[in-house]
Length: 318
Ligand code: MTE
Image 1 (cartoon, protein in one colour):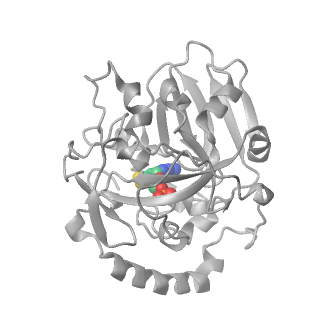
Image 2 (spheres, helix red, strand yellow):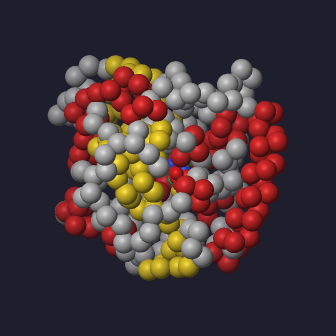
């Protein structure tokens, strides 16, 4: 997607494939993917690479976070993804299997007591994993429910020890156009970047995701580490994080860099503030073929509305 080439996730609802047709097409494509999988994998890629963190799952569920709708099946949420590094359609499940998730180091730098690199498996040993049932509301007006496993972003901030000068957290995905063929599309501002304020990072809802459905995170969800802030549009949830920087300047996200008139820094869900090209009043519940009203803050207002007092002049909802 770009400004001239429209984003795959921006198709107007009237153009979207109805879910039942999409799912039928998926089952065909899954068969095709199985046949073609060998040719899609990077050279030397082991087909069934064992995940060294598998023993950490399932983690105990944190019952604080409840859903107002049924939990979705894994075969719905894992077959409808945005991961532009592997293509600009929702159907990147097969292509995303090229993602190599070990070894995987994360650089923590910027305004911290001590810059460091930490391997994902050492990071997993330093934090408390838990399961949370969360909603995800895409800016494109569809939604999912997923049982994520991970740890509060607050634990990450505590581990990084930012100095008092740090105001924002900037997170960056890998850059490897050999592995991720979508990154050869030079008109995108790779690597994918997203950010939030330190206050947002410290809010208990902010979740560093490492697993889903009681297992290590499948590649298409952004293994081995992604962010999810459920009161914001899904594009804030940067996948496959390689670098976390504590900074004074407000980070410019991938979509904001591409089209600032449509995608901003805050991206808080608000049904009353339309996207310039479509309404945000309702959302399609994936797999159910129905639309429901979108909730302010995606239903998480009691946890987060207070974060934005005094910021009313900002564009909080784009
Ligand atoms: N992170 C990276 N690195 N690349 C992406 O293309 N897409 C974003 C976000 N994180 C994206 C990303 C968008 S637009 C959405 S809606 C969510 O991931 C989708 O997450 P899901 O595929 O797990 O549902």
